[in-house]
Length: 168
Length: 281
Ligand SMILES: [Zn+2]
Picture 1 (cartoon, each protein chain N blue to C red):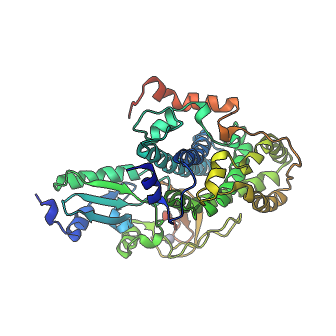
Picture 2 (picture 1 turned 135 degrees about the horizontal axis):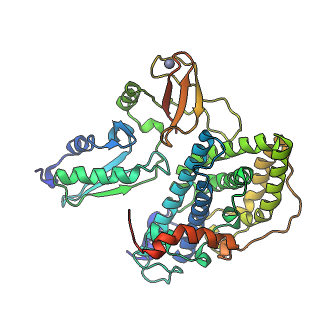
Picture 3 (picture 1 turned 45 degrees about the vertical axis):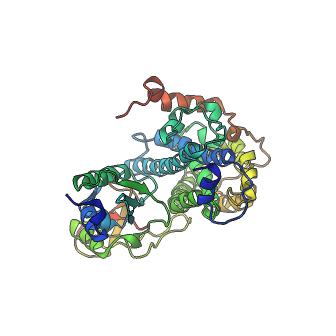
């Protein structure tokens, strides 16, 4: 058991690395970039601040519970897990490792910059690279895929359908 | 923590405070109720959408909107729980929670605009309501993200991109149906006639909004009307649809005076929590 007072932020990050996104289990919450801040007070109490990727993200409650559980396992009995909305999560918060993990898993990682973000109707869909054959000849099948944070695309070259982790 | 010091914490400037926590709570509840009722209405399409992709789309859009409602209710609950000396116009028991606010209040306590509680009707009417309301919400959140209340600003900033997509998706459907077949066009014309009486209310400040303007907490909705028309008229034009002139306006929702529709929504939505209070999954 670790004494709460002695723990470093790095050690805590290692513990939090083991908590994954229930909807994209290949990503840890650190890869996702949703852990904003960790505060250890002089008295040893611990606060973890997380931020949602999407407003309606149904995974947030599960993620909070899982953080609490892993912290309990490591001897933090009174950790507080708080949600912060500001600054707004964007794709930039996702780590490079996270993006690579997504690609290896068969999910196209978010584009560096969102290409479609205005109100105009009937815009051209974002050009997304197929995670299987790297072709850009792909098209949007549905703006929402298996979860709200992913869109469903299909590759016109290898013909495989794939999920795209939407840019935000 | 006292009410004053709490409010101060959320403020981004050190100006004197000219409003009460009750007014801030009423405003937050109004924003929450708008989104909860719209989400409840729109999500009724889950499993009934015209095609699978669109069924998934409106269900996920409802989920986005419900997420906004949760953020606003959580903040409202925090305001109630941190208020020590002010009577809070709310029948919930302390400590307040987001669920208590959604499930344990009566129709009279809901402050949503009448537009969002109207019956879904057909797909065209549901889409039109989403388009009209999302276009309003986009303009509202664009301003609210700069509110002096840090939490309202954060919720709005977070939701803005999602709302932009709701506007885009619904406007494409308005164009597709308005400029579609004779029947789809006629249905859109009927939907406009049915929903138009509820448009004016969006742009009339309630007392709690007026009270929060000076400190730049609330958005002055009366200033959004012209911009709103600038957003929706080009879409109507492309859809070969027309905005009615001088239609009798129905109001009252923001003050808690609702159409009978809200009663049906609450009866269904609140049934479990009323019958088995505090039951959980
Ligand atoms: Zn491919």
